[in-house]
Image 1 (cartoon, one colour):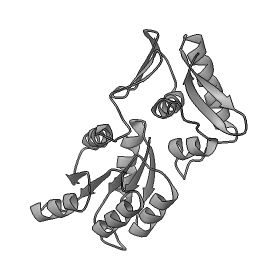
Image 2: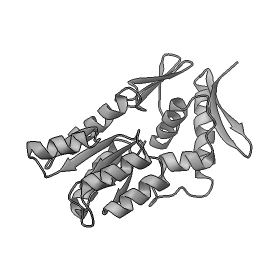
Image 3: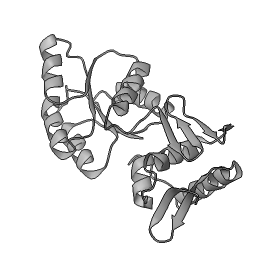
Length: 224
């Protein structure tokens, strides 16, 4: 899942970004409100983490622009503003959660997952496709009752296909979901990862398969 993290404190941004990446999130980091708005209009994010004290504009104005562009994308405010009035303004302006600095990255990860599990969110506790069961909390996978050993990239790719089961995923859509704008995939990386994942699913007896639609993309479907 891809997150946008809006924070102008470079050291804090690096530390929090590293913690989010360890929890298998793809993270884009920007430091200004203008860059945040541009990123939201250019890419699809599963959630946005927003600081209010930005150098070029107030974070609440950024929140307003984000909601105008992508109203369904959950936003978590992370800020040093701890007054009750600030919290109320943030929540009443459309944020889905409000955290006061300093905070532990593990709590932020938990809160991100919590907003993604809400009705309409992208993250259920267990994703199912045929006899494949993906447990999103610990990112474990069971196929035909057996634990599957998959690499991080294979887990990311399988989760994407399972959340979008039955829908065609173009290479551009996969790249947008799994790779940050500072770490684009190498040539043929998506094809190679998909081939390896497909083979592992087949070897483990999965009843859902990744089909290749030449010139279009990929789709996860139940074997019929």
